[in-house]
Length: 218
Image 1 (cartoon, helix red, strand yellow):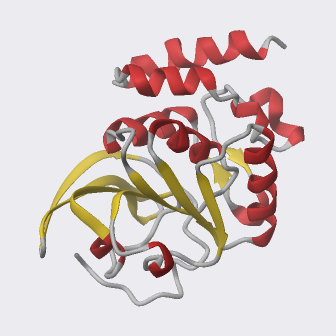
Image 2 (cartoon, rainbow, N blue to C red; image 1 turned 90 degrees about the vertical axis):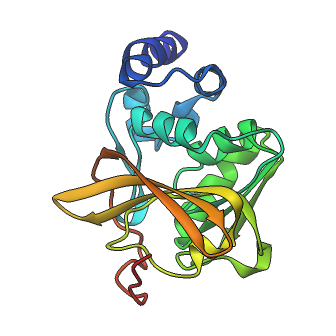
Image 3 (cartoon, rainbow, N blue to C red; image 1 turned 135 degrees about the vertical axis):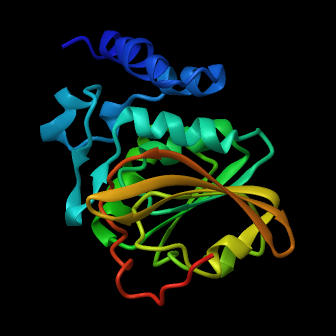
């Protein structure tokens, strides 16, 4: 299988046709090999329009979802980013390419180890990986992030995490429970003000700690 050709086809036939036109995002998707982050047994599916199973009930998001996340966040080379849920490390690598740096926190020791190895193999040097639960925030790298991405779904929006955004900072999150979930972009417009934009409907596995934290509606 010609993976470089498959990557090119993914970008131009799957992603461009799903309202993704940001050239920086498209270039990053062409540059980062998704197969390098997929489990060995699924690498031939790296450029299929599907999620890929990971350890502990998690999954690599489909390439279209990843592209829409990056376009919505509109990352700049000066942005400091928090990723809640490292997963495979693929999105982490893309964020690292588009932003100044990324702090990525993973609750699963197995996924943390696998992602760390994959990112090191790709020589990603501006991603700081930590093992822990950042579902309600990550104080050690706080107080403020230019962007936050939550890579698993949560039942409702909750407190603390959105307070770690800088003013004009953006947060991508998927909210809801199966079968109804929606991707949202939250923008901090003031010290106690946020704007919310509905982006698209999708379904993602919940964060491992999603059911164990207090629920809080923004």
